[in-house]
Length: 417
Image 1 (cartoon, rainbow, N blue to C red):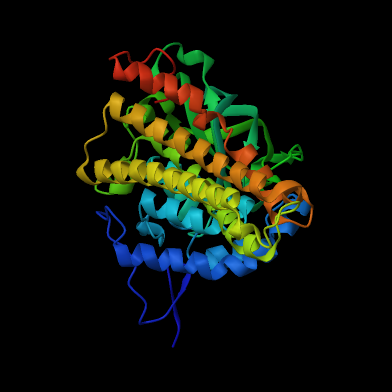
Image 2: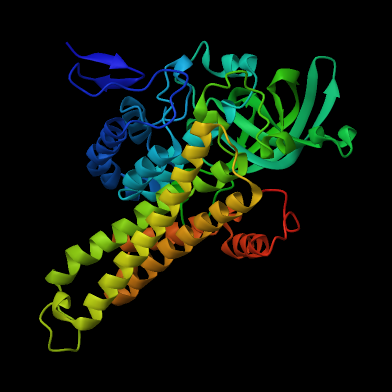
């Protein structure tokens, strides 16, 4: 008889899922099982990729399939039936989904990433989100583009927040706010939790790439937010979280490092998808205006394939190294120092740049046909050109932070390290 464990279809012979509060690393067989579940969904997600791009929203069918496989509960606490895995697992799943559809992978990673944010809040806030609805999904924008004014029992919150990736599928939102009353205290900037039912979604996401993420604008006007649903961002940057469940290793990882790294998984998948397409198509096509009967015979294409594959591998190695370091720090409960976090942020920037360059090399090798609307490569190119320029992954800023840290210069660029 088939049973359901943590929201995912589960056979009694399947590997067990981690449930204990002190889970530190997803056991390798659990991680490989989750990645295998993502791989099994690739045919469906790939078929729907054009539709997601065209309709500017990930199809509900994709979301249902991901949820059914447990892939939207990777960072939900086990206390609420979540898988509570680790960052390396999140990246590997994001990469696998990204090989089929960049927008679906981005939404998968962001919904999981925002669930991780909720895991930092006080217990009452976490209960608000998941106690009655354990499968609730969370979108969010941590940029403090809203205002919170203190009132009896909490705050009145107003603002506009964008881009809110995945908000079309979310039940709650994590929103960045400023508190003008708080002066220079750690409470001057924070994140709050708001039900999506109290927000308005404005259709503003008209972009070249990652169209299916539906990263529209959330609008709130004079909303009441209880005090327990506010978390100080400066305290979070210092890994001083409000959760009382300090034995849950996943929620001990550093705030900014996690926020940046979760964005790389989909880009690793896009790079891998581009390389896959080159290896599939090159043996079937002649190299125009040459004597080569197939592109695969041509040294120029062979060299391009080697370079693209190596760049995609480099992106993956940098991202996985960062994830492993963060998971190890969370396991031991020792927060990485500034210099380590600077290098981790550099890893994320390098991963994004190398993934983007891998796709560019493949497009050049395939020529003008790469940009035919019937060729999935053009969507991959548009998606990664957009995704890799997310502000928190800015490679130039990451390089400046890291370069300064190598010379012992710290904290002069941004507090978000």
